[in-house]
Structures are given as C-alpha cells and as structure tokens.
Image 1 (cartoon, one colour):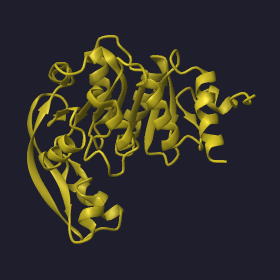
Image 2 (tube, helix red, strand yellow):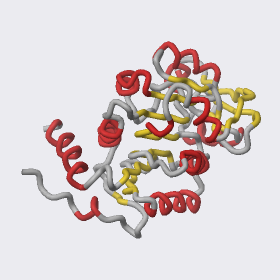
Image 3 (tube, helix red, strand yellow):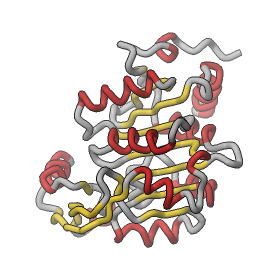
Length: 261
C-alpha cells in the first residue's frame, strides 16, 4: 500500500503554494496526461515556441493528443515547424494580450553552434529583457537581437479562433510561457472561459513581477486549485482540487517513484 501523502503536499504554506522539491517536470507531465485523458479533453499551450526546446511538455504527449491541441506562438519562423511537427493541432500565429493590435517582438538569434541549441527561445516585447536573459545564460556576444512585428489577440479572440477547431469548454490543461505576461494571459483566459476552470494550469513565474505572481497564486488557490512550485522554481503547477484529489496525486507520485527504482 502506498504511504499517505505527506502534509507538505496536502497543505499550502502561507496559504499560497505547496513547496515540494520532488515535484518536477515528470510529475507535471503525468498530471497533464491525467487532465487530458478523456476523449473530449484538450491541451492549450500559449507560447509554444518550437514544441521541443526547454519544454516541460514532451512533444510525444502533444503529438499523441492529435487534434485536441491548440498551440499559440507569435514567431512566424517557428510556426512552419509546428505545422509539420503537429499536423493535426490547431496552430495560432499570434501573441495573446490586452488590447489587441500589433507590437514589435524582440528575439535573440544565436550564432554558430548555439543556433541549434537555443533557437529563438528568448523572445519578448522588451528588447533589454532579451539582452539580460542572454547575458544571464553567459551568451553575450553570441547573438543578435531580431525584431518582428506580431499580431496580438485577446484571450476572448483566442477562444473564438481556436474554438473553430477545439471547444474551449474542453480545455483540460492550459500551459502558458510568455516571458513575464503569464499572469495576464492566465487571468484573461479564465475570464473568457466564463466559469470553466481547466483541471490543470501551468505557467512560468520566472519573469513575472513577484507581487503579481503571488496575486495570481492566491486567486487560483481561492478558485480551488492546489498551487505547486516545480523543482527549479521556474514553473507553477496548479491542480484543481476536485479533479486531483490527494489519492490521485499519490498515485501519480508513486508511479514516478517506483518507475525510477
């Protein structure tokens, strides 16, 4: 019999988040599999990049879900690759934000061997942030900043556009990685859904203002989510309590634990 889940997993610290160092990308992916397991449940990823680089969701999982996937990516240079890699998915070439319109997106184009490793993974609307991120990884002098005007659509527009392919109410997992605008996108999508709460939400907190990130964690906790910080501290995994009970979390964790033995 599997041991009872430790209290650190059951109860949030400071009523905001569960800090569990064992909660990593493998655990997150297994939870995503559970949230998108029903035939009518879908996976939505805002900030899909190329679907491969530095991604907590395996390409295999995305591919296995086929037509039940929505991928949103503003970089036109990456969209063709997404179409060829995930031909059944609904791919939206735009950024999500408020208000709609257009804006200059800045990305780092790496040189030489680094181009294949990093691609254009560093991309945002702040040119200086691109430079800071490249320098943080020790990559200064190995890249140039590229400008691209991209379309911005609102969360409501996203649901209308993608809704021609995948019912928004089928959203089982919402994955957001948009270099600091994650709180805006998550909050906007939930408002646009009008009461539907996806069983799983994962977003990147790395570039979000700490006060803004804490506010989103608190709102999601109040909406009935368990809020977990993944090991490494970059991503926040939110599991709806009425969908992911303690027993289900224990089963997922036990499966990972015993598969490694």
